[in-house]
Image 1 (cartoon, rainbow, N blue to C red):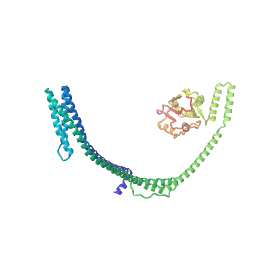
Image 2: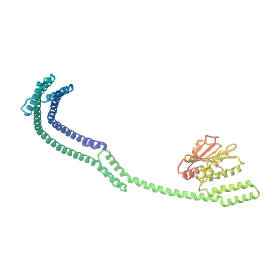
Image 3: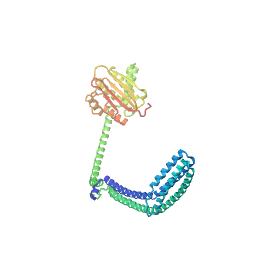
Length: 494
């Protein structure tokens, strides 16, 4: 039995403790209530006779009063009231136990019964005499009834006193028994509560001690001490399972920690090497770009060409050279800065003007802009690579006039920039690869600026701090393509 209890789960052990202790307390309470109930019944029976005698005395008074009232008024109501009181008194007399015994109390009750019968007979004769208008008879009988009424009241009073004497002894004995039962019950309850507390304390100790030991060992493990082990246990409850699992864990946790340390060292070395390679690569790229062109020489050359065109009266050539100079100046000065949507749109205007001069106005450009969004910040060189992609991979590969539509609008708390072409369109596979940075085109134009869509999307994600920065929509080949950029409205005056 003891082994079965040990093998129970903690939940079942607690339920068993509660069940056993509650059953014990319930049984003790039931026993106490039954004992108290017996004593109460005994005390109640002690005073039943006194209560009946008091009621009998009241009923006798009522008969006498109702008879007197009828004799005075001789009304139907008073007569009915008399009969009612007489019937009630007769019923109470019948309830008295008048058996003749050696007890003086029993003999007195018998005398009350007999005298009451005699009294009621005389009262009835008095009423009849009054109804028959026989004044002498009802006067004599009324006097006799009144004398008997006085004797009866005296006898009932004496009987009540005799009853009180007998009942006082019984009451004293019952009260002593009740007090004794009360003391015994209190002692029994104290022992039961103490026993229950001992049982609960023992079971709780059996549950808490292993947990306390487990907590202390776990704290040691947290401090880095793995040379510990809990005592073996045969219990199959939750604590036993946890103890055995903890022992197994401690046996191998040192090896895991050492392995993690080795992996961390290896990862640190690889990261340092990767950062070094990345730094060297950036330095090489910078040197390569710097070796490609001297910005100041380019600006001075373009400005000299613009001045020459102005002196010769070539206004269109002057405007073209000025816009080209502004375009390259924007690329060099703001290539790594945050700009506004308005500045980016100005760059697009210049870029498409240059292209239309080159391609004799083959690109039709239209835009619809919510001017309240022009001051929203955006990384530089975001829109121009997208427009360039639309032209090089969409419009230039189609027949007819190319068209670029640009819209700036807002939806809820998001600013949207839409760039749409009427070119050859894209397949869903191409869209997926372009958004994930896997799209590669071996036929990229040699004049392409080198900032690809992967670069644009990556910089937007870093700037916006979320991934859903762009969507590409195309219904298939020949339907054109729409690029939509989603920017937060933070930091704007919108």
